Length: 359
Image (tube, rainbow, N blue to C red; front, side):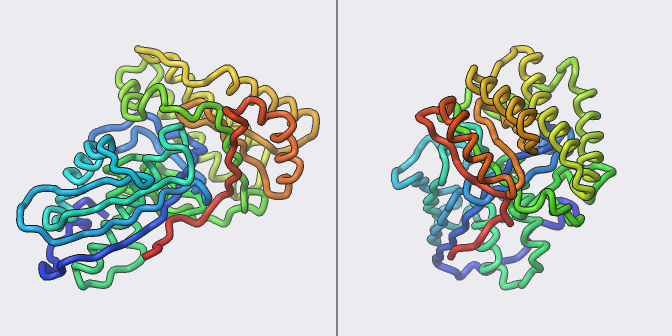
């Protein structure tokens, strides 16, 4: 597939109004994407677990209008939100060539999250993927052409990527690869569902998200990615991601839990190491982030658990573990880790199947 394959060439102009609604989940990368080229193309491939409970629900209403400008209102969790408008304006400008009907309608975007916004749980991934899916549902109704589910998902992922890179990994589940590589079926343009048979050890995996800091992220992802330009360790990091993805593919198929833990935790720490060694440099972890990591390591040694952690570009900790260990891990979280969470808050999540159309 190329960009040209996603251009909508013809559509009905007599549809006056309508409404669509999607929910789309966040995702957590196991091999991290950090650094991007022009047009949201990743510098290195990544693979992620699609989540289930952490999601954005977006309803997009549209009404025919006369002028030729972009026109939309944003309602976030029941209130008008002007702060989101510049990002959505940029998104519409980027995707207009592929969904040209955007200028024909006034849109009301009503959206909400099931988790704290901008706190390192990839709200841009779930938010932009939900909006992209709404756009695709409108395209389907305006074009009058039935397209395959595969094409629908690929174009939705392609559009979502132009809003937020990691959003392209939220359309499907359980595992999604993004970024050209030699190890898996892949593309730089959209996320590709990992279709190899996953070992039972990694099926129904659990993710408890410990909310160390629910505030705005210290550094936006856009700023963070730009720090990879001229970074002294960037090229080696990109090579490492290719190597780790190739090995993780084999691990997911073979069921090697020990090696899974090593790769996933190393990837998380490498992401933060790249931020700490950039110019300017940032420390995104908080003291309680380190306390949790050390507690997890200690618990693993003492119990033989297959618990591990990963991090996004923030202070919160994703605690990953097999479903069979859920009872003992959640007891450990309640007794040992909850004290390090802001207001004792954490989210119980699990690997999910992807986005879902609601209306």
